Length: 105
Image (tube, rainbow, N blue to C red; front, top):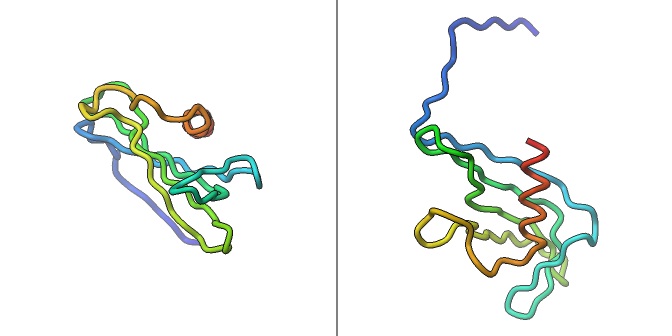
């Protein structure tokens, strides 16, 4: 491959975002929506830093398979309504996925 690059890239600190994807072990996470069990096999966690502030996990998107083997995507907002802290009442398993993504980044 013939490749060259020039310049000095900089990050704009107004609202920087990254996404971290992780593959989940088979059967390690089951999400239940409307009484239907969905086996999660991938998670994509979105992190953001506004105005050079601390990084915060904003959202996690799960890719799952239902009982009929149909692929379903579910998104979970991680921030409260004021966007200044974590959303209350989320299961510990979801926060475990966020922690796994944070350590993988």
